[in-house]
View (cartoon, rainbow, N blue to C red):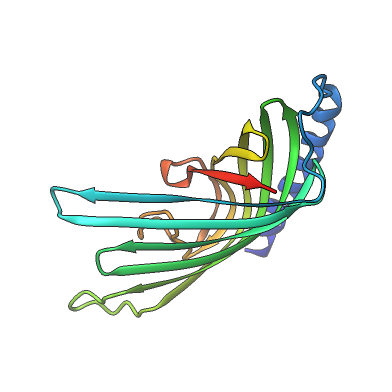
Length: 197
């Protein structure tokens, strides 16, 4: 287990090193319309879905906030709350953001994150599953921001690379198992807005 996890960390570091080398091969030829030096950002996403055949609602809200040190590095965290029938889930995920490509109006980044969650559900009759259940994740989320105007971006998180132990935010409960790898499933896609000031 530790051997696999160490191999995953070495792979992540090698990927970051290769991205930095690629950035040198593709210098940004366009000037920035604005820079990100010393700016705070807030944002997030809101989702609601009503399944008419099952008469069930799903709701999630994911606010985030952070600080950009410069055009390359930032830190932040996002919170999440999900509601589905008799299940409530909460998570906290701090992250370090690394922008590896700026091509106006596109910015590509990686969020190195550690997440923790709690899932509170009403036990099914005859089930021995205890509530609340806790889970965590450690990994990298690739993302992209599209500058819509000065200080307003459309942001997308596009997947997950790392390790999870019962972390099920944004996923079906049966997917939230122990393991590691790369996931680019629809459940991993997050779209939201960010406001910089």
